[in-house]
Amino acid sequence: MATVRTTTGKRRPLAHVGLILFGLAMLYPLLWMLASSFKPTPDIFTEPGLIPSNPTLDNYVEGWTALGEPFSTYLINSSIVVLGSILGNLFACSLAAYAFARLEFRFKRLWFAIMIGSIMLPIHVVIVPQYVMFAQVDMVNTFWPLILPKLLATDGFFVFLMVQFIRGLPRELDEAARIDGCGHWGIFFRIILPLCVPALATTAIFTFIWTWNDFFSQLIFLTDPEMYTVPVALRTFVDATSQTPWGPVFAMSMVALGPIFGFFLAGQRYLVRGIATTGLK
Image (cartoon, rainbow, N blue to C red):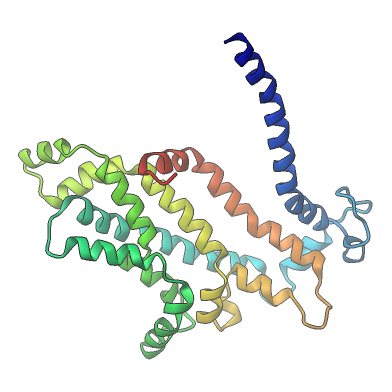
């Protein structure tokens, strides 16, 4: 037993060193982009080091107003889309999950299987009929095509995540609430929803990251530059004539990454609990 413990003890420092090296390798592109945001554009691809020889904030000043509109406009647009998507997913997906986990209705297994199958559908399959439908109701170039589907529980992944969480809650809580006079709405809002905080936080974090980074659907539905979100605005920096101002691009990219890191760090402990308690390992 002593030999086994000694061998295990020797392996742990090596494993830690390996994880540290792997983490640094994963972080290097981000660190390089951060360092490049403080370099003049001609020095970005000529200085291989991470420490700028001539640090400057001009990239942030130039990038903030380089697209005609202040970059804060695109941050606000992304925030509107993200906030609407989060609220829609939290409300609609939690209701759908409660129905699948607690209610009994006809063809329940069939509808659940269809919901699971929708997770495998790529966005390219549904984006064309969605565009045609929203164009017919004159909603193209508004935020509604990006928010409205979230209010209809179209993200099957989050429905499945909450179903798994609710199934882990004891049914005795529902029965006790029913004895006290609660119906399904009372059980949902007073019992289930407060206990689903880890799953709700996980849904909010993933929705924030995926929506904030979404480029394809936002490019399809938003045509007016004043309506652009952050990913679409960053794309307009890139010039096909190889005259791309990489300094401002990297500077605004770091500005765009700030909310992601902040939101993720704020909800990290709920994210771990949510994934651990829903069986999504």
